Length: 529
Image: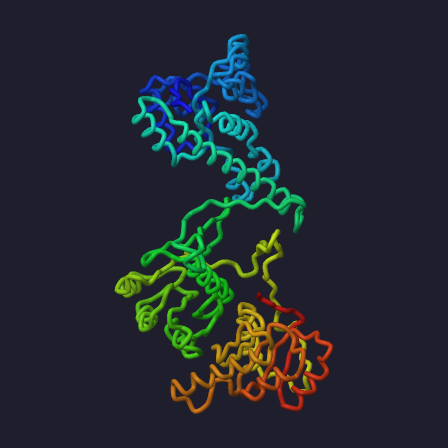
């Protein structure tokens, strides 16, 4: 394929960033500029000669700008195969001039939705002519260059400078691929709005998913796997994908995954007291609240200091120097926080490999959305687990009711268990985890493993007894047998919170009564696979 000289350019953009500079660069090479509406106005205001699209088509822009580029004079000039004699004859017969360059970015649909616009305004911001021109130009990339992103203007200018006003086939092909990705993402945003917001469909007949690649990662879960980070082409929440990385090595796939798990859990306490979450391999190994962040960090670390080594720390408050100093006393991979003061940043700066992520805010744990998991040959899609049960919805099922402190510990343990891989058992006491058992094939083993970790912590710190003594224990799903509950009782738990719903609930309740436990049912399960 040959190089193409750019003689005529059609520019129609919503985002005017870099437009004037591009216009001057094209005009300097005697490229004829054809434009529409506000784009033409901006170019003329910069002193550039511009031909209105109506001069090209012979028709005025009409219907509030809805109809201006949907015309054979435009699409003929874009789609004509220049070395096809029949196409060339049709162009000559109908006086259709070739268009060599198209610069288009689309109506700001996502931004319009994000600002809470009315339905009519949202509909008016569905671009029709723009995507049509983009697709026509991209299809005919053998002869036409298409740009959809202002970030690519400099690349075009450099291409023209290096090739004396021409673009190469490789350049045009690369632009075409990006153009089709842009229109696909744009259409997917519109289809998502129609399905989820306008039609209130939780699971539409066709699921459109989009995303911009923001980073290629060093590797995936393992070195032989490749990985990249994509973020949705939509309004962003405060998340790990959007966080500012202040310092440290490049984040890996596992870093992102673990940091996301930590942020999702600490977000449960966004309106609560100072809270620290420590995560290892996407499971919390210590969570605590405290009067200050450093108090919370120390209490969280004491739950399982062995697993915390090389872990991820997330906090729900701005980081201070004292907490930063405590965190850096052991090897920590990533720290995530809404913000950090200069003194804290200075502390972390001494650990050049530690990644510090500032999210600006914490995500809303009650937000909606979909969770998507690939399986062989398909996708499993579900609504995200944003379920919450108020304390007054708990049902006391034992003879003894929990005390106020036990109920508070139950609530805390239950919140943590939601974020622990199933089968999940969490012991908690006085606003701190005492032991966490995760990902076991049966609930009894999770209860025993969590108790064992608590015993090891007591030996490490020289405590008289493990923290599980007098604790509350949470189970993410019902106890199918009494053995798991009895293992928790043996560890010293005095209160239990679980969903209930087993065919053996009566047996489990009787065992709790025999052990003198107080137990509440939530009626809600939190499996996490």
